[in-house]
Length: 469
Image (cartoon, rainbow, N blue to C red):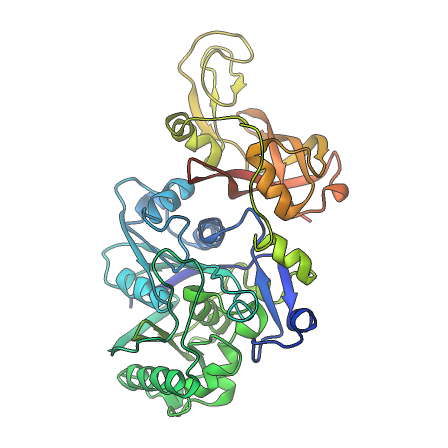
């Protein structure tokens, strides 16, 4: 039966505790949430989607060239107008012939994307990634971040037995006004609770499985208490709901919360166990029944992380950063940037057919014999060693990196050596996810796709490196 063959989870390393938040505001509007995940200054929905998808694809018995559909779900795409998935396809080196789908605008988008993949022919990749924002004094309190990825194929370890829907208009239940990045709502608690609970009840009750038989359930969870309330009219045990609840550890990750809860429940589940997922958004509730389980790469991220204080949180999220800098900085035209995407995402280098030397980027003359040749492309290793290092102190960043530095502080830039069977690729790169003072020459680092900077209103992405320990 068609279902989930492999999966991957990604949660940013920074965590803000509810106690820290309450100390800052004198109260907390994050009911039932102990910690929430905080995306770093160079992370967004796309970078988290790439990280989760890489983990899922690495565990899948499917070649990337075989993927026939790439579907993504998010309420926070990098651009309000402009497709999300083509960048994901390029960063993951999926075939350019792959069909694509983007589900956005509501928190049930992850379930909608997964449902589309179940109807596809051939292997499909689904990623739900989100990092919603809100008014810091109120709506922002429960909002977190994360990503969940699924490889869907036939004869899967975790078969999806049924999908059911329920749709009705629910005006005022979580929305964003056009052109506004902040999540809003009417704060009519009883109305909202009843609308969501009714929709979730109808969708789950329409499944062919008996909810009372479910061993785990990932239910719509904008806070830690809501999934139990949303399931209040269903014969789901509190133990089952708890097994699929992750919002208490990562916060409300929008369209990714229920998919992450589903992965938490499926990780290590036995073949005979049943997991129900029920997501709600924009008046639509979607329910899925999954039989069996699998090992989920990255699921340990749910309980990991590094605690930060509230002032650091405000900077990382850009709430107290203007982003305004003086000076022009380096300008790389979009056509030139686009031509270098294979190098920036996949570390594609070239081997000289004359002398066997390696050149990165693979253009111009061979760096070894200086001959003008047609290089033989190959992907360099994604792990390497720091050969040289410098730290760019506060105020020392070039203008195009100044906003990153305002939000994240000093950062390290390294010369990284990547050893491949074709030879050694050496390149300069930023180090991320590490205190720059704790990085040293000789450290092992691994490539990760992150946001580099923004020019002409368009975010640009590429490889940075993070310490492996």
